[in-house]
Image (cartoon, rainbow over the protein chains, first blue to last red):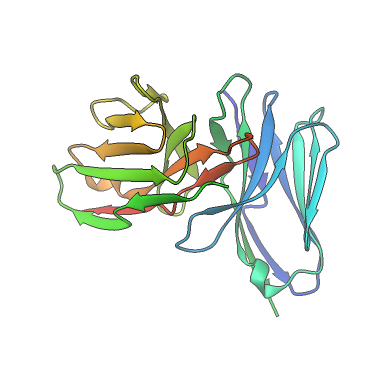
Length: 112
Length: 114
């Protein structure tokens, strides 16, 4: 069974600071996704990572993938309040036909 | 990208009743899924909605409780049958993009069972 673990589950950080969210998964994966969810809203796709060493950046967010370590990171640079949300990583298991296994999510609060 | 709509957006239902949730996509898609997000929790896959054949259910979910229809490549329904308060959740459909670039999620249906 594919397991996905995120940490931390809760993160309070000051504006302007940097931080990293970690996502570990237990078996080989075809794809790894990062999503953002605002309260009461659906999921917004942030990144899809396909191969070892993949790095993608959008604004203050950068995601990377190490398939050998089965680890993905979501790095936040110079946080701003608008980044406050819950961030999920999700992993597509081998042969799963695109079905996703989600981590528990990281609830991020950026304070002044 | 795919634009997904769901109906209803929310509902409050009585124990023992059933609710059918609709998912409509603005383009034909091959892969469509139904997920559940219990309050304050992550998402759990219920089933893969297969066009023209029976849905494929994940462990812990059964067809009698969550019957799914997929009559064509743009539409699916999920029924939550004989509801109990434990079924109170957000139910989301998702589809795989044209080039399998990502998965898109619908806005969700927030269900409360009293």
